[in-house]
Image: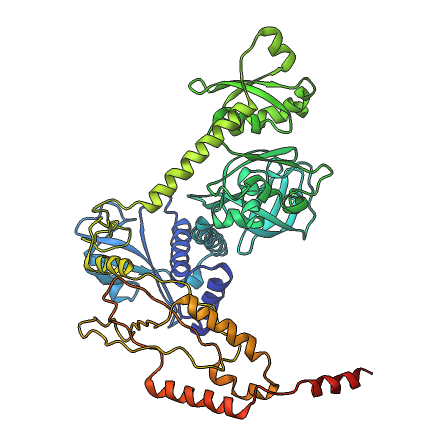
Length: 562
C-alpha cells in the first residue's frame, strides 16, 4: 500500500513531539500492531504464522506479508506450501518466492473494519507503554525531589495531578491532614519512587512523607543547602507534629537557632506550606547529640526533662520529667512520645520526678550530660586543630603528585654564626651616652677650641656609615660655667643681634667614649670654620659697645605707660 509520504511523516513527527516518543519507537509500535491485528483476522490464535511488515516512511510505503515454508511434501497447509504451488502462485503474481519462503501479500485496504479498529487499539497501547518508558527515564533522576503539578481530577480517594507529559495519582493517605484541593489548584509533590514494569512506569508521589519535609528544609534554610547544618533524622505524623534533628560541626553555629530563624521567620515559612487544613502541623527542632541520653532528652521537648537512664545495648531508656510536664512528654494521643521513639530508635519509658524519688531511681541529670558533651566537643576541636596543623614526615598532601613530600618544620640550632658574633662584638664596643644640654641662646664669645685627632687607618668601615669620635680640650664643668656667663651677658644685647642668631643655632656636642685609643678622635669643626667664627665674634664686639646708656630707653617706655 502506498500513501502520501508527506502526510505520513507529519503524523509521525506529531506523535513524537506530543508524547515524547522517538520516531523509531513509533514505527516499531505500528509494525507490531499491524502484525497482531492481521494474525487475529486470519485466525492465527496460536501465533504460529510468520507475518512480515515493511514500512518505508520516506516513500509512504506500507507492506504486509504472510509467509509459508516451501517444502516437498506439505504436512500443514496453514504453515507450508509445495514447490509446485509456490511456482504457480508466483507466476500468477499472487506471491513471490524468497529463498525457502513464499511471501503472500496482505493488502491493507482489504482488511476488515474490526481488524483496523483492533490495530488502532493495539497501537494506542504500544504508544502508552512507550510513553511510560520515556517517563521512567525522565523521572528516575527526580527521585527524592520536589515537582509541581496542577490538579485535574478530585475524588474521595485522592486526586489526579498533571505534571506535564503525564498524570500521577495522589492517594488520600499521602495528603497532609485534612487538606483539600480543587481542580486547577497548583500542588507540590515529593517523588518517592519510580517503578517500571510490563505496563510501563509508575510514579509514586507523596506530601505526607518525611522526604517532603526534608525538601522544604533544604529549600528554605541556606545553611542546610550549603552543608553547614546536617539533618540527622526526621520523625513525622503529617498534619499533627514533626521532629527534626539537626547537627553541625561548626562550634560557632547554633543549628536549632538557624533553622528557627529570627523571630521564627524561617520555620513559619515551612509550616505555611504544610497543608491548607484547619489545624497546622507543629515542628520541633531538636539539637542532635552523640550522647544518647542527651539526645533522648532533647527529643522529648517541649517537656522539661530532669534526667535519664539509658542502656545503649538494649536500646532502652527511662526518662524522668517534672511532675507538671508528664502530659507534654506524652503528647496528644501519645504523638510526642511516639515521635521521640522513632527519632532516637530507643524504647522510652517516662517517670515523674516524684515517682523517681519514691522508687530511689538513679539517673544522669541534664547538667551532667551537658558537661560531658562540652568536654567531648573541646576534645574534638583540639583533635581537628592538631590534624589540620601537623604534617607528618613523608605525608603526601591530597592532590599532590606521587613522590611529593610535605615540608617539615624548620629547627634552629643554638649555634652562634658569624653574624651573631659580629653583633655581639659591636654591642660590647658601643656605649652611647646622653647628649649635653642644648644651647638655645646666641653665643657671643669665643667658642671653645677643639683639637683634631688623627683617624686610625685600620678602623673598619660599615657600609657607608662613618663613625665620628670627638674630644674637647675643656671639661664639662668649665664648659657649663662658660655657658652661664655667656647667657647672662647676652641678655643685655639689643634685638638687632638676632640677625646673626641662625648661624650659631643649637650647637650640640656628643661625647662618645670608647675603649679604643684616646688619640683616635676628630673635631666637629674644621680650622677654616673656627677662624670664621672668631672673626664674626670680633666684628660683633666692635659693632656694639658695652657702655650703652639704657636709661634713655627706660624713660621712653615710661612715657608710653603714662
